Length: 161
Image (cartoon, rainbow, N blue to C red; front, top):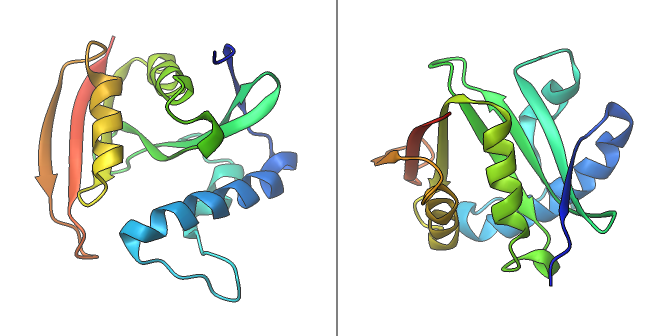
């Protein structure tokens, strides 16, 4: 049985801890993106923006029983003003136990208004997960979009009330 989740903002003094968890996430995603580490470290360009006074970005822990179970990076898209979950990660030991679903829905419910999500088109597990999150939670429309990196994206747009 999965214990109840706790959601906490990630403070600037925890950024090094988040960086280490972000490395696990990028490694997991590298099977879909082809990302390769440089001297053992995966790059993540916008990382510092989450702590330099940009109110349009925020970082969140999900904890179970006081233990970090994952994180999410949330931002507002400068182009269309929609909020989006830029990165979402649950440690493997907590996957398929309801923690990710509860965390995702709690984050979405935190900010009513327009949202969008996108998944790599070659990541069937992520597409299925986000469809499950949105099913019964928010009516959405979905489109496939091309991306400059050559990996298509599946995008869902919806409003949270």
